[in-house]
Length: 106
Image (cartoon, rainbow, N blue to C red):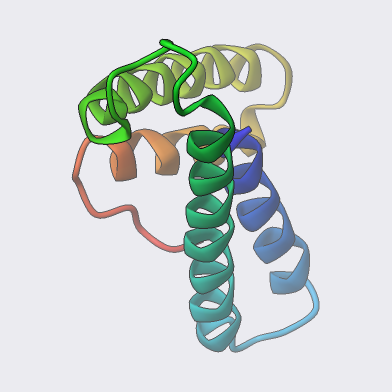
């Protein structure tokens, strides 16, 4: 789900970029939307899963969540390279962000 939020962000910016020349404001808004959406989703998931025994704490599970996101982004990259090479930048940006490297805009 978290990767889907990231895809929605970048796909929206891609579409908006075709219509607007100055996308910097939209990029900031999309980044804020992504951050808030991820925060609310993870908090809701944690609240629902708390006490189920799935994990001891959300803090301890965080590295595993990042690993799963990287794995998903790599699968997305393979798909995009095989089917929509022009979209490969979306999972690449996700991989860069997840590995702590700055993802270039656009």
